[in-house]
Amino acid sequence: MKFMHVSEDILPIGEFKTHASRVLRRLRAAQRPIVITLNGKPAAVLITPEEFDRLYERERFVEAVGQGLADSEAGRVVEDEALSGELDAEFGAHQT
Image (cartoon, rainbow, N blue to C red; front, top):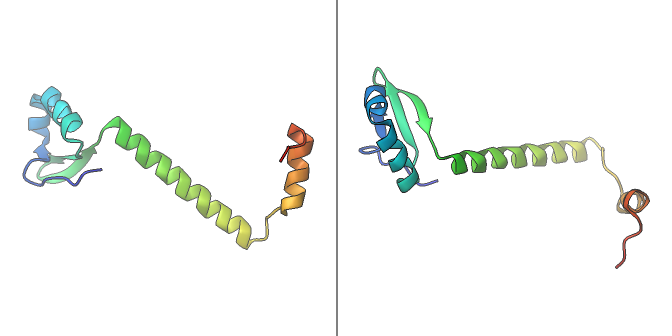
């Protein structure tokens, strides 16, 4: 995600409503988030769908790593040999 430009990327909601198509084209072209304000305070942040997907996938990855670390610390682990045996039983013997 590119850094936002305060002078260009903060818009009052009225301006957004009046020029929504233009704002969305600018969002796509500039690839920077746009902050929409309501009564002078931040109310929403617009990002591209691709940026949303990237952020969502990153969050899921971080959560999965955290869960894996918690499992490891709690002793919820499977030894390599046991895992290989389970995978071989489920999917057939692997060849190396």
